[in-house]
Figure 1 (spheres, rainbow, N blue to C red):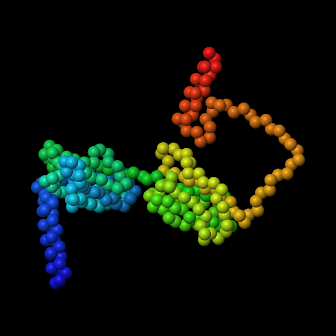
Figure 2 (cartoon, rainbow, N blue to C red; figure 1 turned 180 degrees about the vertical axis):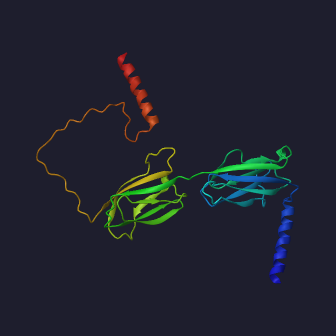
Figure 3 (spheres, one colour; figure 1 turned 90 degrees about the vertical axis):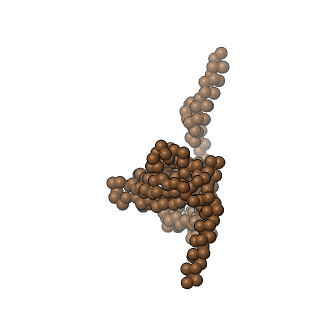
Length: 267
């Protein structure tokens, strides 16, 4: 009985607060929200209301679960909901985490009459890029443990095979990741190089961090002792060729500078 009375009291307070905030709806609209090309089992749609100044109205946000078809042929899902429109609402915005809209993701309350109170939203799944740490130099017979830390990332990775790799969560940020040898490692190693700016193509779904390590237990290769001095003539390098690690923009800029220098020399 006490719990029932407490629930009634809380409901009454909430209702009075909503009225005080002017959150009582004066009209309704039917919205359809669809998601296409998704590999996830479901998505969550967020419906938010904004006033004419662009400020979000308190206590008016709604969340709806959109189940994606389990049939591999379709990978789509949709919901149809009738939502309230509050007196102070000027714009209603729909968003879905991990998705981008195929057209405007909002509607203006002033346009509802022309739309006959029916609005449709279509979203598509965005496939997040993944950060992958690639380890070079691990002796599979002597595993090594690493500390991988950064924004939203704090893990111990146990590398026990050649060319080991660790996929990080989508929240990890490549530029903020740091890698160290973990104190709990079974065998001593040292990190000899970390490369974060590994080149990638726009369509690639993976971004790499390359880490080179060296086992301290393995015999180090000795420098060759040859009393014969060999002078090797290096082939001339064409200055117009693109250099390793040079961006396309910098390469074109350098070519332009070479052309301008050649013109000045010829004149």
